Length: 402
Image (cartoon, rainbow, N blue to C red; front, side, top):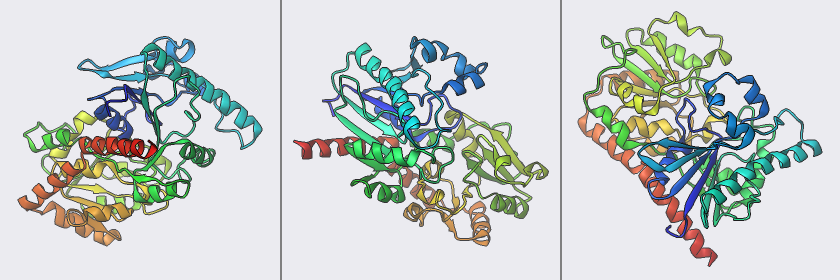
């Protein structure tokens, strides 16, 4: 591990987006021992002009057009984690497959490679690990004079079933996986899919267990929490993965409880159900990761009301270990094979009636031993443990390569 001076992490998630990201959490943990650069998913010129007045774009303008000020120190107390903004690229996703797309893609990848070259030169990096976390649109091949000592590609979602990226993403993911030295999938389903290209390794998501264990402390209740009711809670985006008919069923069957949905919401795009008519349903909007334990503290049970389809079957949910770190009972649809690992600690539901029954059991639960077992399970799935696995995979690869 000491032979590498730095780690370059590139993802589809930007460091300052409103929703917490597994790739960013992993980068933060890696930065405890190594200089780590978290590279923004490039903004296209269309993104820039469409959102020109936003703070997100304004703070990056010089970097986007001039390449100046591309580095941002995210935390004052962590000088080893640096956000990087590449220059703006061409908007080409709308194009069909073919020569024109391939030509413009090579231009965009060249622009992206200019950023990699700048990082290497500006920080005099001699050896580094490159982690491409589910962004096959850039970074392969790497044309910077100094190539990575090891290149890792990580699949975090079913790219064939993911909106927007499924047009060109599947083809580019094959190229990225073939280019990589190590391939990792965050679920067993994704690992099996990647292994059809080349042998791949199961590398599941984890949680900031230390942070979410603070929910066990006496924390003031956020203003959105109704202290007069039992609280059925959810963290995450309220969007494409949610089974809204199930959510409606929960709201109606537990009208005496508060259904608290913590995270950004764009549910109107995916359902005709008007949740504003349910007075017991509360949407908080996006919250910072550090704010979530205060909400978790007051949840009597937590839920994962996901659809069961080709997209969700490939998900190892980030939130499950966050819920468990607070010792909370979890009720989930059985959307993924990976949830079987937790079957003795959570309520897995095969249909709506079973989900409702699970909530009934969860909100009346009083089992301190089960609380401790859940916390113990979460601690096995912390980012600290994942980083140990990360470096073990790098070590194993290097030993085989010698």
